[in-house]
Image 1: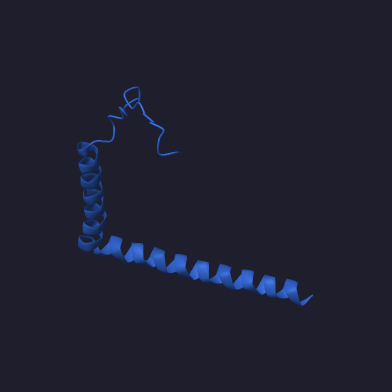
Image 2 (image 1 turned 90 degrees about the vertical axis):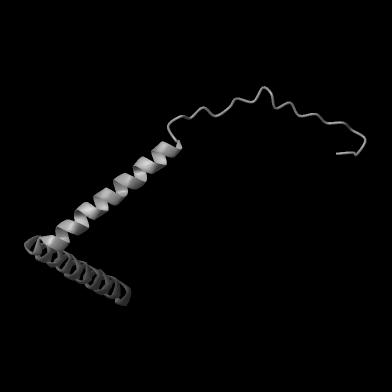
Amino acid sequence: MCADQNVHIDLSNREDDKDELITLGFYISVGLGFASGLWGVCSTLIFKSSWRYAYFKFLNGLNDWLYVQVVLIKRQLKDMLNR
């Protein structure tokens, strides 16, 4: 663009973003909902020992299952590459 050209950009016809859903109240309610949900789950696990034991037993079983699946897939890939 040359320096002697006068360029005027008209911003008056620009449509304003009228998205009223995303406001400060929305962010506050999302934060409060997250905090109360997290506290609900954590406090249940803290105060109910039977639920805590069941939850961590489930996580331990899930960890074992994932480990077995990874070992099986590695073994299958190793067998396929050695053929």
